Image (cartoon, rainbow, N blue to C red; front, side, top):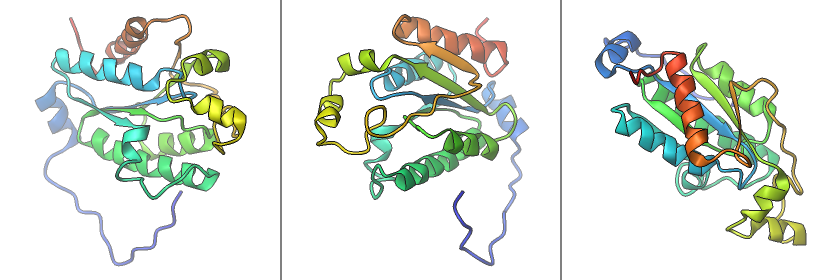
Length: 204
């Protein structure tokens, strides 16, 4: 994790507790961390999940890989070091959303297991829900709307996960969803069912 450089700082506590927010919002905040190869369906599932939660009166917000690189992380590339810093920053943002009792949905390749485990440690027990959006590489390549896999195969795109850079599969994710044989609706329903079973939300 990043080194602490600022000195003479102190954490300031407010009067509003997490329990106050849970009572007010009738939900439990968490970070739903969607990880998987480019083209596996992370962003598609994230969009559907956010919509389903809001339709049921639950507050959720997507942190998407491409979108974040337009602003907060626009100074980062795709080297291993930059990927790690990208995920570290997102983890800190997701932690703030979770503390605010929002259901944060992240859609990042996040290829390194250590980086994802660092975010898990950043959050409290039960606040980090790792969802492996599993999809065979050949299927991801068939879905390649941006043409990135083709460019990676040709060598014009460097450090591309699954081709010229590694992807380390989660070892013990809370959920594994294979989007090569599950529809977007089925994938979304699986996550919603998990959230209800663990009492983050209640639909009935």
